[in-house]
Length: 179
Image 1: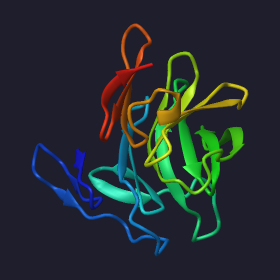
Image 2: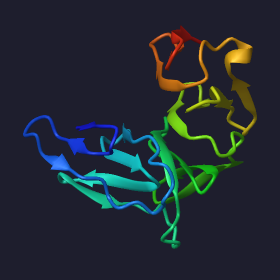
Image 3: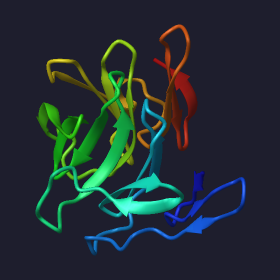
C-alpha cells in the first residue's frame, strides 16, 4: 500500500484505491501517515482519523474513545508490538486493547507531527512540521532538537534507525543528517 498527500491509499498489486474516511475536524488537512505494526497490520492517520486496513478496506479505530470528535494525529509501531498514539494532545501506548503507557501532554504544543519512531533503545522520536524533533525517554523526559541546536532544518520529513542504532533524519530544506 502507498498513500498520497490527500490521504488516498493505493494497493500496488491490483491498484485498488481507498479514499480517506471523513474527517472529525475542519482544521488543516494535516500530514497523512501509514505504518505497519509488529503483527503486520497497517494503520493510517489522516485529518484526525485513525483507521486500520482490514481485508483491503479501511475501518475507523477509536482507541477506546467514546467522543466522536476525538482527534488522532499520528501512530507508530512500538518495539513490544503495540502502537504509540499521538491523539487528543496526549502521547500514549496502545497494546492488547488498552492504554499501557501515558507520556502525558504534547511538549510541542499545537505543531503538526510529521513522523514518529520508537528506537530499539526505547526512545520515542517525534518529528514536526516546523519545530524539529522531540526525543522522549522511557520515563517521559524530553529533549528538543531544532536548527538552533544543530538540526539542518526544522521541518522533519522522515526518521529511520539503521542496524547500528543510528537515527537518520530527513529534513525539508536541509537534507539528511544522522543523530
